[in-house]
Amino acid sequence: MPKTTTKYITEVLNDWQAYGVEGHFKAKHAWMPYHELVQASFMNLTQSSYNEVVAMNSLTANLHLMMVAFYQPTSSKYKILIEENTFPSDKYAVASQASYHGFNPNNAIIEFKSNNDNLVVSIDSIIDTIEKNSDSLSLILIGQPNYLTGQVFDIAPIVGLAQKYNIKIGLNLAHGIGNLDLNLNSLNIDFAVWCSYKYLNSGPGGIAGLFIHEKHHKNSHLPRFSGWWGHNQANRFTMPNNFDPMTGALGFQLSNPPIFQLASLRASLDIFQEAKIARLREKSIKLTGYLEYLINQEFKHKHNINIITPAQPNERGAQLSLKLANAQSNIVENLRAFNLICDFRFPDILRMAPTPLYNSYIDVYNSVKILSKIL
Ligand SMILES: *Cc1c(COP(=O)(O)O)cnc(C)c1O
Image 1 (tube, rainbow, N blue to C red):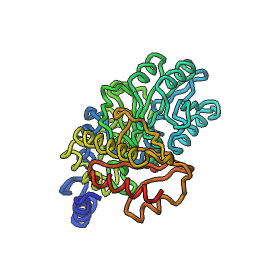
Image 2 (tube, protein in one colour):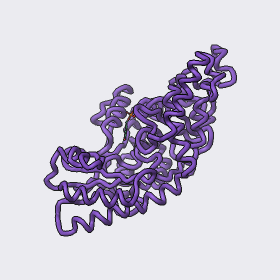
Image 3 (cartoon, rainbow, N blue to C red):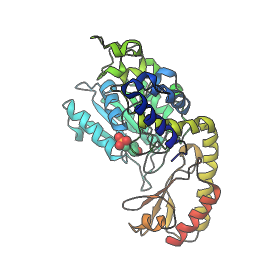
């Protein structure tokens, strides 16, 4: 938890106590435009312009809103391509969207698969899958990086193909935001969504974010589910009958946001603003490289660990996924007893993520010793 989180949330509590509902305008940081306090950070973390990003809702809710806008299937072009090993919630979301439009998810959802048991997918096989299904694909959704393997995909050639075949493309940045040095505007994807409680440290149930590329901002035919918070800020509180959306991502806001959550997100993002994502990424590459080096040294003559995350720094973020031989499902508890927090995905994948904001080289060194001892 960032040290300033308590202070920022207490400020909101004090304003609430002093002003009640009038805190919308009178609070030290007025609640009505409070989301603007995180706007610059979201722009810097994603390299986007002002109207392309917004903090709102939760990730899965935003994913559905983006599919309302960008998944517009026809009887012949209706399929959605996702990773085989995607976070299950994303599979539920795309399957339910396909069903909602009257398609059978078993047929409408295509997965790009890895050709070996280390679960990593080659760019050639992704391109091949898109080429083979180019007529029927409507949407491509990719986790950047993949949550299980930590693989970062080369998105540019995929975007090129998507445009060639008139396929929409969105990214799920749950594990990318605050981890990778992103450049969403120049990447030219259609949309992206993320949560803020992973690398961004916004705390439990933290508010999520979304990106809509500026090339769509003048398209008044983009379908959307609307709410009053997307209405022109100048006369939002006079609540006219006709919806006049704000430009871009801001116009997709539905509700007045949870200010406590925005306050805790602001506390964390202020640190990212100061540290700067490019510098964090630079340290992250070294920190993760050091972890990889130590694991390779430590387990060189023992065949009980295989790093499945790609070795190239541009094909991964902070995370290394280790495939364990003879994995014990209580490994996470055993590591936690030494204050080492990792994640285990059944049946055999341990995820470790040295985080440049608060992990040191010594932490990395000690963690490999602990891991060796436990295994
Ligand atoms: C963490 C994560 C989610 C979680 O979704 P919420 O709506 O925030 O609960 C979804 N997708 C991916 C890929 C994730 O890593």
